[in-house]
Image (tube, rainbow, N blue to C red; front, side, top):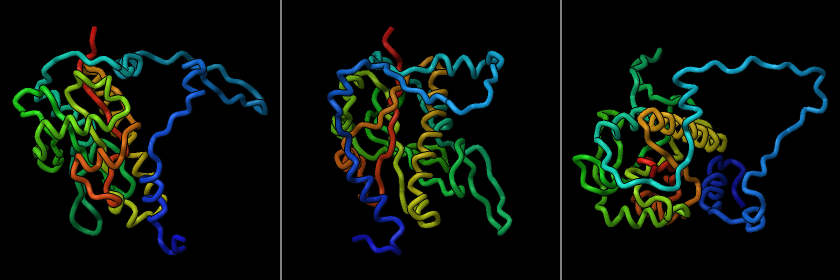
Length: 248
């Protein structure tokens, strides 16, 4: 039994015991069998104006997942811009109680920013292949592990066959205690929401630069966490996005 006054163990237990599983019947059914809610009790229907065009609308329309990345060298400047979009520092916010905190490119519950970005990098200009950690404070990368560790980490993804030419896999790593020390069990939800904000920024940033993405939630948690040098159950990957040039 988990004590009633323990606000975090249940979410940590859920995270470690929610490995991907496959519903074979669902895979055999029509791949695009979309379901919708009908508002049967609605008193009226209002037809909306057609959405206006624009640069952002074009990126929405152009963004799509790819399962075939081309062999390509990513400029270091492009990687830098993608990191800024995903979780970069955009300003300094003074606090009424004194001091200040670094504002990021995405919202975060209580401005606690429980996410860290780890990267599996290959064929990036000026960088040795390897696993890197992103330091948003100085907008810099720290090389943590060599290329061999990258290949091990890629093997943890159920989408590994699609990642052959991807230059970067952005791993959104949660440090659970940063958020849950304030918000308890609901803090786990906030962490996942923040990962979604970051991934969407990353996808749109890639689309703006003519690059393709593949968002990935299916991976062997313990294997990937170990490859990144994370400390379970206090730290863990919650979401990942592969980025590169799509095959034409």
